Structures are given as C-alpha cells and as structure tokens.
Image (cartoon, rainbow, N blue to C red; front, side):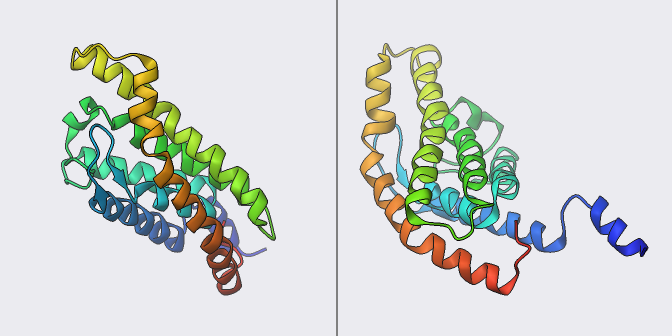
Length: 196
C-alpha cells in the first residue's frame, strides 16, 4: 500500500478542484456585471453561472464556489451586482447571494451522480435549484424592505418584485443550461472522469 493515495484521500480539495471553485466564483462575479437594471432585484447572469456550477461541479464544489464568491465580495471587492463590502449584508438582495449557495448545492446534488444526465431530470433539478435561490432571496428582500428600509411591503408584493419579475429571465437561463449543460458535462467527463 502506497502512502501517496492515503495522502490524497486526506486532502480536502485537489488543485484541480480549487481551480474549478475559483473559476466558477469568478464566473458568478462576472455575471453580476452583465445585468438589466430592474428596481430592487436586477436581472443578471449570476443565476446562469450558479446553475452551470451545479451541473458541472457537483453539489459540494458548486456550493463552495458560491461561498468563495460571497466571501470575496464581503471582504470589500466590488463583485456583487451593487458593489461589495461587509455592509452588503444589509442590501435587499443579499438573500439571493445566500440562495446561490443553496441553489448550486441542490442542482449539484441532484445531478452529480446522474449519468447520463437526461434533460427531463435536469429540468427538475434546475427548477428546484432556482426555487432554492428564490426562497432566501424573497425572504430577505421582504424583511429588508419592511424592517431595515421601513417600507410597508406585503409578502405578495415581495414575491412579485423578487420572483415574478425576474422569472421569465430565469426560465430562459434554465433553457440555456438544459441545452448546453449535458453537452459541457459530457465533454468534461470525457477529459476527466473524476470531476465530482
């Protein structure tokens, strides 16, 4: 029995995994700069990157990539849709960032052991993962508007401005991931079968 495999087993992340986590954290940051300004919750490409991270990295690495993205932004680097820094936790949209971790993990867990990944199964995973983004996003939006910004906003209004307004854009993103996700994953698995 060699000592090298045992050392490899005790390592938390390989260099390849660290690189992929950093890459998808960067992709999510870049996605925040590509946006359509809508009041309260801008339409960005961040959720597209969250979906792709789940499909391509698996639950653990996808969630970690989103945690890295959040931590880098909270340290003061302006990579969020409206800037960065520790004060960002008081933004109405901070719940969506928390939802990115949840959504990436859910999509990744649903899809990581599925081989081949069918588009019907992927569609279910993406819808559930997107819901996992919306739940903390709309919840924090509602709480922030009512208790921090002192605006009387009903839950139905928060759902409307925090979910229904951006839902058509997210449905298009789900379509993009449905088309390209299985293809990209198949290419990655052919080049390195031990990705997730």
